[in-house]
Each structure stands twice: as structure tokens, then as C-alpha cells.
Image (cartoon, rainbow, N blue to C red):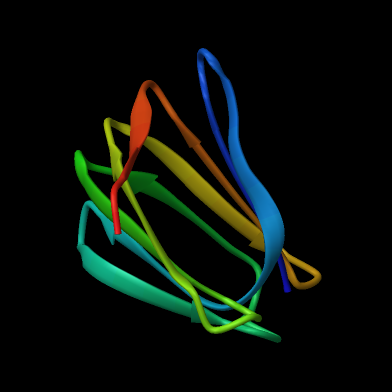
Length: 85
């Protein structure tokens, strides 16, 4: 599935991933390929991406939202930075 992480300052990451975990208001949500359409508000925390190449990417993010539709995940947040691996 295609995953895009964007903040007010621009795009942080765009690529193919096996899984994404986001900090939703109701708790952590794991998103896999073929997930049902989904929209949720995000609270500050970590967005974790397991890329198709096996690499784990971690982003420290502020408030925002996530949308999932047709194997496309968009994480839009106020601010974010990638945590060094």
C-alpha cells in the first residue's frame, strides 16, 4: 500500500509499506493492506511504518488525521520529524 506522511512544512515520507501504526484518539491503530476506508484524528505520538523493504521508519508527530482508502494511507499532521534509527 502507498503511504504518505505530510506536515505543514512539507512531505516527510512517501513510499510503499506493509504496515502503518498511528496514534489515534481512541488508541493505536494498525493499518495493513486492503484496510477498510478509515478516517481518524491523531494525537501527538509516534507513527511507525514498516516499509516493503523491511525497514522500520519512526516519525514523532503532532496532532492531525489519517485517511485510508483504496490501499492509500495519508497521514497529515501539524508537525513531524523522523526519529533516527
